[in-house]
Length: 355
Image (cartoon, rainbow, N blue to C red):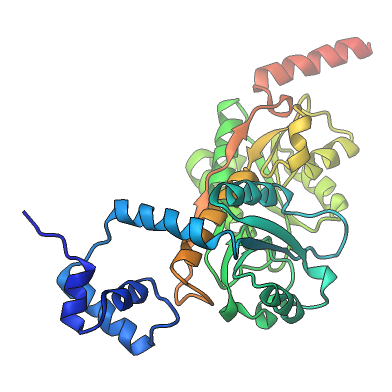
């Protein structure tokens, strides 16, 4: 039977106190880097593994001791262009719910109210806040100016840019593959994909790659339709693509593409089926739109949990290697993507009514 290695064992091996070992293994800034490395090396050599039960107990004690005096988490949003609408509303709600469960409070900081990332960081630091959740990053100047080294930071979703920290985000490739599968199993064969063309959008690559994979694995050669990359104001290019490619179903970046279909005189789903790759927060009140729900609430909760770990282990600044935790989206049924036979019957009924 293997005997568990304890902190006392590591302390005896390295000639330091048990408290120093504990702080070093939690990457506490009070411990010099050379000492921390020496202790961690000894722990690895001895085969030290933390006791999960003790870790949970320590976490509980840490929250009950620290949260009342330094409990605020900053949720930073960088909407661009500026406006009243906040992209991360769902994620903020999820993070706030989890923060309250852990004994924190959460405060929303809007980038546009502070004039720059450096000033925003200084305000947060002067408030005594150590933990930051960063919403969808929409500004190119943010990363180079924000004082990362002062904070524990987790990216809560991504926007045009990916922050230099650990990130929790939707699995965009999975969302497209699942939407394609839902359209295919309903009898659609000429499936087209419409994405917004943004130079720095990190999800465009994932979705395009997933669309090409689906075409290669599921669509016969004659049914392949080029992915349309269009700017958010590219309705004319979209109309030309529809006439040229004649898809029987469209998987769109979001519900705006469904509105474009109707604006061009197409009936959904009588003429063309539609599924949204990103159902907006308010789409839940519009049951007619089928598609993928990113569950931003869950993304916010998960990001808060990851930030809590970083705060308890004193991990600050930009990590040496960034990790990405992906959350699978959920399919939501809707009338916009009926089985193809049902859509065909509806077309006949509409024609008969017009006679």
